[in-house]
Image 1 (cartoon, rainbow, N blue to C red):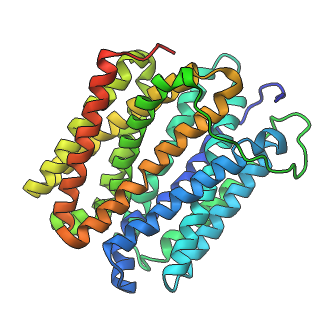
Image 2 (tube, rainbow, N blue to C red; image 1 turned 30 degrees about the vertical axis):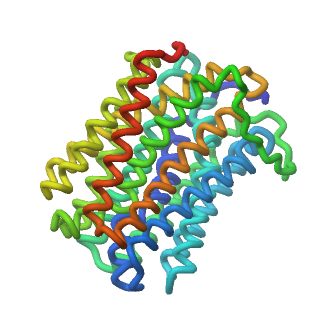
Image 3 (cartoon, rainbow, N blue to C red; image 1 turned 90 degrees about the vertical axis):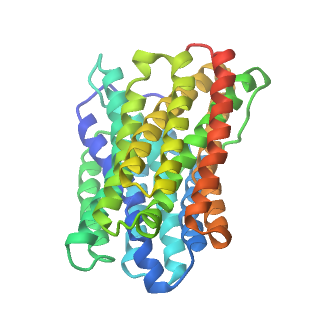
Length: 394
């Protein structure tokens, strides 16, 4: 891929990225309201949430490199269009079919945005500011994910039309993002109009498997923690901790992503060798605190768990990505990174559906305790493995 000379617009691209990602997490504090309105179980809440990961994985595998050929701006506009369509599904929902459709479209949007918006922020950065642009892209993506629940929680708690106003505001923000995108410089030289899709395979070369397995499993645990907060934390807050404020629910979820952004920013100072075992340690601490918050019915412990777990997710995820990227040969790097993201997004979906299923038999509190115990064992095992067999520094 050839790109033109660097031009201003990196900050505007970061705003577009943040707006697009915020739209994908807006429903988080609202699931309890949908449950009351439509009368479905906690298991169905987690299934509705998991459909998002299906959309993300599909978009990454089918169109992960599409913007390299079609251009950044058309793909960004397509992703924003999908985000708007998702908001309309929630705005006019009348039952589960539109909720499923909204989450699937949201996943497609996130899958297209993740790579395209990151590349746009980097390519529009001023010369000599690549490291800063990489952090801006990280902060925009993770910050946007965290701001979605915060915004919808505040609007649902303190403004009228709790299931409608959030998505009207989202549509307005998407319109602003479309205007910004329209005026962004195109960084792909000679883009092709409507190039054919080239589904990307997933490959893990034998020489990279020793790095890939612990890195991907750590990402799985970190994303499972994110999935827990995104899908069922509002139910934990209301049913187990007695906290019914949607604003508080959104703020707790926001704290996880804030801490994750901080963890990813620390990688440059910590290094891959120490970041992955350190991230696993913080994941263990965060999960133990989440479990303790359920057992003791303590909101303070849940917030501490969100902060520790989010920090661990940020450290482990970015360290694993750097290690996997460095270990794979150039000709197989794309497929290896795709496999890494697929494992990560399986973590955000499959375990939380398990929590929903367990909740039917054990109750939400006990299901959460089983969930955290399983992830503590897995995360501790990964941490010990990479402590004794460190990853190569990338």
